[in-house]
Image (cartoon, rainbow, N blue to C red; front, side):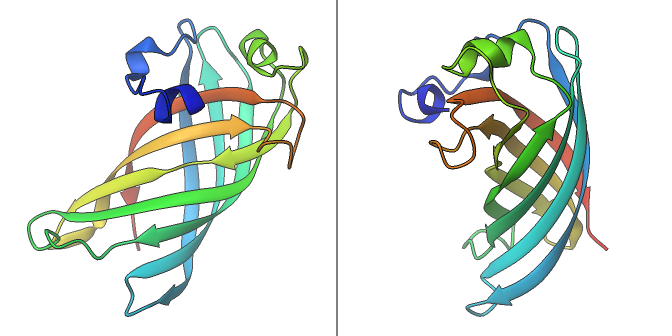
Length: 160
């Protein structure tokens, strides 16, 4: 994650995870909003499956902080959010072991998922979601593993 955000290598095409991909499904709920509804706190539970060169399953629980008061929202409704939570994987892939910094990795890691959403102003209940799905040791707070796998994901969120 530091290479991507701090060193400027933002292109997911340069991330080396072989032919691995990820598909997931989550459910979330807004539990609080404040400061004239510009900010919201949401809970999320999710499940996902890696495919290709990695085969592990993942489950996660997270809290998101969302901001939604952008000046262009009358044209394209936009929100940004970031999470903190826990992610558990059914196994530890060779790629995660290599990135762990401890040669073993960990099944339980910190879950960070910054995201941006876009929706039509007349239909905010259907959002295009672009999310960075990231597992790591959380700088030692959750595990001594430095890093895990991460994916740039694109999805559809339906709010009801």
